[in-house]
Amino acid sequence: MDAMPQQNPEPPPSTLPPQGATSVPPPPVPMRTTLRRAAFGAVAGAVLVAGAVIAVPDGAGEDEPPTPGPVARAEAAAAAGSPASLSDLTALIGDRQKWVETHPADAPSWAVLGTAYVEWGRRSADAAYFTRAEQALQRSLAAQPGERGNTEAWVGLGALANARNDFVAAKKWGETVRARQPKSWTAYPVLIDAYNGLGEYAAAAKATEKFGALRKGAPALARMSEMYRNQGWREDALATAHEAADRAATPAERAAALHRLGDLAAERGEPAEALAQYDAALRTDRGHLASVAGRARALVALDRTDEALAEYRTVTTKLPRPEYVLELGELYESLGLDGDARTQYAKLRDLLTRARTAGVDEALTEARFEADHGDPEAAVELMRTEWEARRRSSAVADTLAWSLHRAGRSEEGMQYAERAVGTGVRNASYAYHLGMIESALGQDGPARGHLEEALRTDPGFSPLAAPLAREALDALGEPAAGGPAQMEPPEPEPSAEPEPPAEPEPSRETRPEPSPEPSREGGKKDGQEPAPSAAPSPRPGAGATATP
Image 1 (cartoon, rainbow, N blue to C red):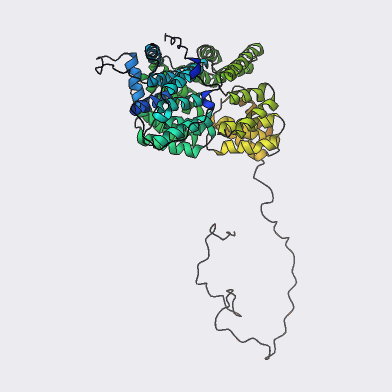
Image 2 (cartoon, rainbow, N blue to C red; image 1 turned 30 degrees about the horizontal axis):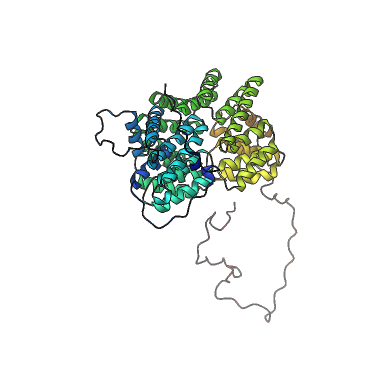
C-alpha cells in the first residue's frame, strides 16, 4: 500500500494570508526578466498540473543512481509533464518535507511541496491537503516573491484554484505566468482546465494547441483528445487517446490514457469496451482509483449490479469524491434500497459541508443532488450563483436547466438546456434533460428526438434516469404515420365545362400586327409554339420547385 505523506511542518503564522490564496488576485506583470531558477520553476509548475513535482536541493550531487528510486521517478515524470504514481508522489512529498525543515528559506522547495500537496489532495479527495498546499505556496512566495522569478509558486496557486473549482482565479494565475513566460509550457495545463471550467471552449482549444506545440508526447495528446471530445469529434478524440496510450512512457501515464479510453467508450454506450479499458488501466497502475469508479459505472450499465455495488463501496471508501457518493446513492435508490440510499445522501451532505469549509466549490454536485433528491429551488440558486460568476460550462448550463425544470420553470430552463446540448459534447444526460423539458412544454416531436438520442448515445447513462427516459418515450408514442396530413392541395372535382362562345373576328383596325419574335414572357404567337429560352431552366432544388 502507498504510505500517506508525513505531517506538513507548520509554517509561521505571519507568512499566511488572512484568506484563501486563490482569492488573492495575481500581481500585475512587470516587463522584467526572471531571476535564477526560472527554468526550475517552469518544471515545477508543470508538475502540479500533471500530477507530480520536481525539486533538487542546492548542492545535491549530479550523478543519478543506475536504478531510479521513487523520488527520481517523480522528478522524471515532472520533467515530462506527466503524472507520477501515488507511491512516487508520496516519496517526493516526504523528501521535500524533510528538506524544508532544515532549509526553511528554500522557495523552490516550498513551491514543490505545495504543488505536490495539491496533487495529493486531488487524487485522494482529501481537501485538507489543499490547506497545506496553500500554506506551503505562501511560504514559497514569502521567501521569494513571484515578481522576483518565483513563477512556480504562481503556477502552484493556479493549480490549487482549479482543484478548488475556482476557475476564475486559476485563469488569472495562468494568464499571469503565460504573459511572463510565453515560451514555457507550464502555465498551459492550468489555463486549459480553467477555460474548460468557465465554458470558454475556444480559448481552451487555443491553449491546447499551444501546449501541444510546446510539449510533445503523451501529455499533449491527452489534452488534444479532451479538446476533441468537448467539440463532439468522437473519432478524433478516440484516435488521439489511442495514440496517447501507445506513446505513454510510464505506468501512471499509460493508466491515465487507458482510463480516458474507458470514458470515451462509456460515453458511446459501449460498457463492455469501457470495462475492458478500465481493467487494463488498473492492471497497469493498481492505485488508479478513478478507474475503479469507471468500472462501477460500466458494471451498472451491464446490469451486473452486485459487482457494481462492491466497486462503488471500495472507491467511496478510498476516494470519497462527492460525485461517486451520489452515484452510489442513486444506484441504491434504483434497486429499491431506500435506507442505503439515504445513508449515502447523508454522507454526501457531510462531504459537501467539509468541502465548503476547505474552500472547495462543489456547487455542481450539490445542485444535481438537490434537483433530484432535495430542494430544486436551492439547486436553482446554486447554479444561478455559478452562472453569474462566469462559470458557464456545458455542465453548469445543463444543471441549471434541469434545476429550473424540477422547480416548475421548464420554459425558463429551455434556453440553458439548448445551450448545453449545443456545445457539441455528446452527453446522454444533456439530451435526456432537454427532451424532458420539451415534453413538459408540449413539444412532442423535439422531445421524442432528444430522448431517442439520449438512449441511442448511452442506453445505460443513469440507473435512475435511463428508465425514466424510456417511460417518457413510450408515453409520447410513435409519430403519426405518413407525416403531416394535407401536404398537397386537393385535386379539383371533375365537371362538365361548357364550350366558350365564339369570339368575334377583330376588325382590321383593331387586329394586332404580327410580332417578328416571341414576347419576353415566352408567350407564343397565334398558332405557334414559344421559342425556347436562351437561359436554361433552373434544376429542381436549385431555386425552382419541381412539379410532377
